[in-house]
Image 1 (cartoon, rainbow, N blue to C red):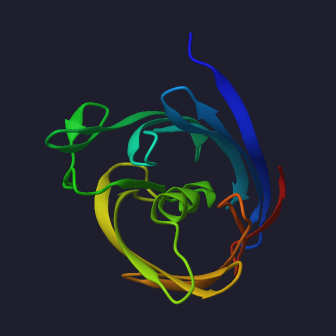
Image 2 (image 1 turned 180 degrees about the vertical axis):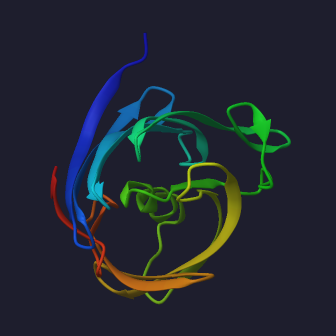
Length: 187
């Protein structure tokens, strides 16, 4: 049996629609794990997704499971990195194995992964190739991202179509994602 030690728990409130997310970061004997649940109410529909993301000791994303209900439809997804690239429910996606970090579009929890892996320090930035589970939950694609240190606890996030200055707790969890999320950390 693998040992599991909780490191920190993040709690967020959505700012764009009614919703919450809660995620716990745990250290395992063989790596790291994020376990969380996101709920939101959008266009008259209640949505709920539970997720767990597994990483190696060096924070490289290995796999994730996502399940729940979105827009009245059941969701059961298995994401995993293979030698050929990322697979979604065993179907290889257009996202190669160079994508070291997994980005689940519906939660700020996975911003922690590249921040912990890269350990971005003063005046540094890191270019990330992320395996991005798209908002429709139907596919994974490569998403190029840049994280840039602005000041202690403040990191600029840039991707193809989005930029935001993120407040980051020492645990690596984002505590403020302008216009989308705000939260706090129990460490």
